Image (cartoon, rainbow over all chains, first blue to last red; front, side):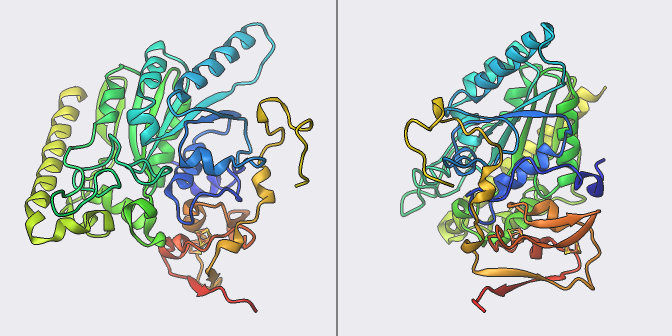
Length: 309
Length: 94
Ligand code: SF4
Ligand code: SF4
């Protein structure tokens, strides 16, 4: 459990003056994650909205060391920095305890940077990887990614006469990461700050690789009013669209369970990207989405039971 | 920030100072401005926790107002405030 009054005393690592859209979920995710440690941090980001908008030359919104980097290799870059740190520490040239954290969007994590992430996890570097998941390539104009959910309209999977948006289901990245048998992986959401900061504290404290998949709504890509970012994030959790789970030393568990899962339409109807699903001819897709969520939830229930023993 | 010639730019385009975005004021983006009724505020800091632009001023665990130099007027603070003491008002020039 984190105490908000205590957290407010930690100096901001991401300053004002960045150029992310008004109401962006990504910077909220970064702020909350960085509240998870008071140690000095070295950060890096994969190409994406966050990287571009926080580092428009000659400005940087990072009040901590930040490494600018390509789309596919932020995990490799942070591994290199962490290895150099360990070598220098061994030689006695650095004495401080420093934390290393990489940020990537879903494009840079689920898809383009997956190989470098997998490599870094397998090598076992001591770092935290944070995916701020807004479910499409927003920086380049809302193209579908491996994280885009079924039925969402994107510029490369547009809804229209013959299509209802993306037909496939999104990847289960958190499970893919956990399959590397790292000490810690979790899903968090910016609307549940206490849950997220607590997970971040664990991630930073653990020796070895840790991974956080953070649900971060994007009002431009999802088509909703900018003031609703947190409200919509909360609905994702309450409907089971984004389960708050964690994987710690081989055990899966829910960190929060809605008393009663709301129907997923409660979440879908708040966003323009799903608007077409409410047309008569697309009603079966709504049913399918609900079914997929129920199936996944039941799977998670079994997974938590099977690994909790 | 003064314009630099190519000879003055550090190798690799390094930015040698941290947090320089503070020199770039994003407050001009705003069309609505958050206004607080401090009498109702319970200092729960939910607004601070959820502001994407770190624009809620907090001192000694108390909500102290907004940083209008950078606040983009998204309205998230007003939406998360549990006692609804933040209102979004059209940001007209006085
Ligand atoms: S969310 Fe509302 S009550 Fe809480 S500190 Fe902010 S203004 Fe005050
Ligand atoms: S309107 Fe948005 S940017 Fe301004 S203080 Fe509120 S949350 Fe922050």
